[in-house]
Amino acid sequence: MRHITPVLLLAAGLISPCYAAPVTPNFTSGTITSETKTHTEVVETIKQIEYTTGTSYTVTGTNINIPARPSPGANYTIINQGAPFQFSETLMTPGVSKETWIDRKTTEIR
Image (tube, rainbow, N blue to C red; front, side):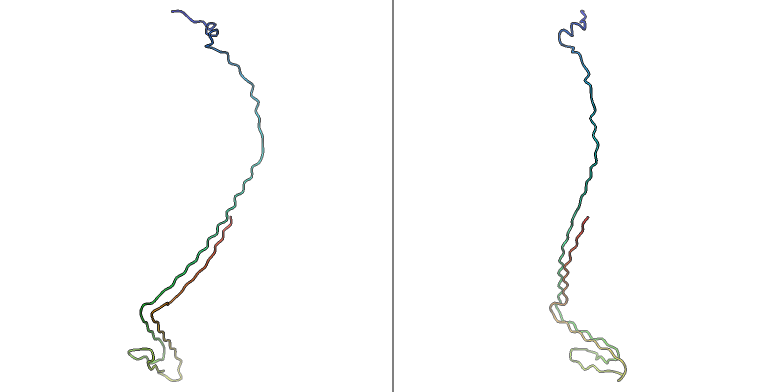
């Protein structure tokens, strides 16, 4: 077996010489400032309507004579004349019983 000498490899172009190149660092300094702002706006509209489908009649009171079957137009009388009394009568018929409307705007800035 024949030995190949380095001179032959160099001559054949299989080995090429390597040279180091000088490296000069190039450093810079500075400051980076960043600011982020967000703006959030939420607009809400809530509309709630409650309906009754029947008739409701309510009578309450103190020092009031309430008959066994209270009804609109019944004869209610004070039990002890001259004493304090309280009387409340409510008649609800079918229709709208309550309406709630809320318009709200919320803004957030950060």
